[in-house]
Amino acid sequence: FPLSAMRSCEDATVPKTIAEIYDAIGLGPFQWSLFAIAGLGYMADAIETGVISFLGQECAKDWPAVRGNENLLSTSVFVGELVGAFVWGPLSDKIGRKRAFLYSNVCLITFGMLSAAAPDFYTFIVIRFFVGISIGGIVVPYDMLMESCNERHALNFTAAIQFWWTFGTLYVNSIATVILPADWGHWRVFLIFSCLPLVLAALSYFALSESPMWLQDVGRDEEAMQVLRLAAARNGKDLDGVVLTEYARESEPSLREVFFWAVQTHIDFLVICVDAWPVRLLRRCTCDPRDLQHRRGRGELRRGSVQSLR
Image 1 (cartoon, rainbow, N blue to C red):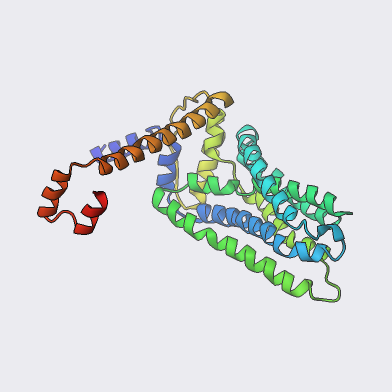
Image 2 (image 1 turned 120 degrees about the vertical axis):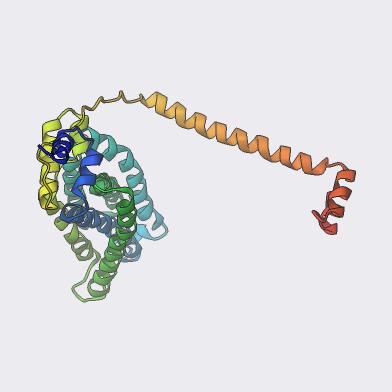
């Protein structure tokens, strides 16, 4: 056989990492579908954040308790998002990216609809808190998108996905303009319409593949290769003969180790800041006047700065 043919056969059977396989697959429909699914998540986030701007004034028409407590509406949602950030990450590591995305969308639609049926203001606040928690998992496909492309394409997708936030903002403002001033319009109807794009995001679950990196991390290498072959087929590539490298899973740090590492990092940073600035200030204030005169003569200092240092 020709030497070039022998080399190509050898390369085809060389174990490759998931990143190397994705480089071979290249950019194509697989990444663009992930971009659309991740974008729907960003759009849903923008919608649920945008409705806050209208609910304070509208809910006050039904519930006098809202007046003076409008900030509770936004606070409940954003505190919920903070809590959700600690929920959906570990959960997606446990059950998988795809299932976490589905559960997040189902929760978001459920609590979004329940918001429209809230009987009183304080029940409404509690439900919106759970809406905030649910938001955290709908951006999981964005992580999967970043896994599937190289650094240059990742930067482009990171910038482009912000347009989906704009689409969400335009949507919520458009339905508010149409629904709220109408005779049949009500803030409850407004909330129901704000949930419609979330249904589309939930349906995109059926077009989403599990993350190969997560599958390999939990020891399901064959399923990871199936997803990679599917991605290659959608992009018009072939992975015949390609195998995954063996992956040694690292032990995860305990919560205590992570906490103390974060605390120690911040303490070290503060110590550096505290130590550095007084030393610099002290050096300026204790400069030898003869050195200043010498530097002034060389044109390194202006007259005004010498006088101030004296």
